[in-house]
Amino acid sequence: MKTFDTIDELRAWVGGEKRRGLSVAFVPTMGALHGGHRACIEKAAELGDVVVVSIFVNPTQFGPGEDLDKYPATLDKDLELCRNLGVAAVFVPETREMYTTNQNVWVEVEGLTSPLCGRSRPGHFRGVATVVAKLFNIVAPDTAVFGQKDAQQAVVINEMVTRLNLPVRVALAPTIREPDGLALSSRNGYLGDADRQRAASIYQALLAGRDAISRGDRTAKTIIEAVQTRLATGGIDDVEYVELVTADTLEPIDRVEGRVLLGVAVRIGTTRLIDNVVLTVAADGGVTEAMLF
Ligand code: AMP
Image (cartoon, rainbow, N blue to C red; front, side, top):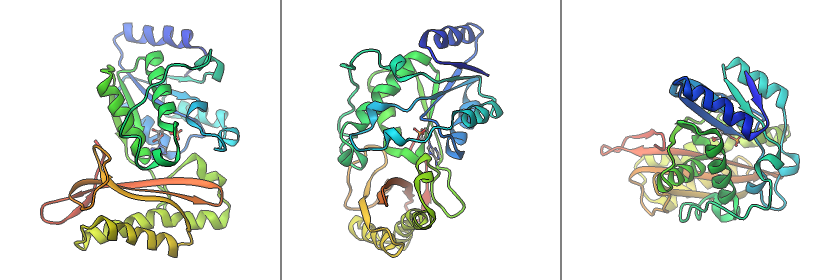
C-alpha cells in the first residue's frame, strides 16, 4: 500500500494506474477509522479496480468552538486497517498541502444546506463541498463512496457533482451500527460510560418514529413528537433537531409519503451526535428502510 502526503506524488501515481486501464474508487475520511469507514472502503472495492482513501481533518468544515483541536487521530491503526482491506493508496496531506494560501474560492451548495445540520453549523457544508471538490480534482476518481450516516453530506456532494458536471460517480454505503443501534462515529469515543448508554436511544428514537409511520401515522408533527418522547425517556434532553424531510431534496414535509429522511441531532454532554433513517412508505402502507440514492 502506498501512502502519499503531497498532491503531486499522488497525482503521478493515480495517473500511472489510469494509464494501465484501472478505475479508481475513492473514500474521503477524517481518519479515526471504524466499521463505517470499512463499509465505504468495501463498497469502493466493489466499484473500482484500485481504492484510494484520504485521511484529512478538514479545518474549513469546523466552526468556532467545535472539536477540530481534539478530533481523534489514530493514523497507525488507520493505515493498518486500510492495508488489511486491500486499499492501494492512502493520501494523508498536511493542512498546508491542501490550503496553501488563504482559501478565497468556495463551493456553496444552496438550498440543501439550510435544513437539518445546516441550521446550527453555518459554513460546515461549504467547507465539506470545497474540500471534496479539491480532493476530487486531486485524486480524479471514477467513483467516490460516502456513508449514509451523513445523509445530508451525501445529498450535498451528489448535488455538487451533478450541478458542476464533475466526472465522478457518487455511491453510498449503508449506516453501520453498534449492536445496540448506535451509529458508528469517530466521535463516539468522546462518550463516557453513562453517556454511551444514553446514546443508544438515538437510534431507538428513530425506530419509534418509524413505528409511528408503520402504525399508519402520516403527520410529520406527531411522528417527530414520538421521536422526541423516546429521546427524552432515554435521558437525552439536549435535542438540536428532529426533522422529517424529503429524501431527495431535503425539503421539510407536513405529511409522510414516498421516500423520506428522518434525521436527528443531539448533544450528549459536549458531544454532538447525528443519525438518520431513510424510509420508504409503500402504497400498501408498508414501511422499509431504504438508501438515499
Ligand atoms: P468521516 O471520517 O467522519 O468524515 O467519515 C468519512 C466517511 O465515512 C463519510 O462518507 C461518512 O458518511 C462515512 N461514515 C462515517 N460513519 C459511518 C457509519 N457509521 N456508517 C457508514 N458510513 C459512515
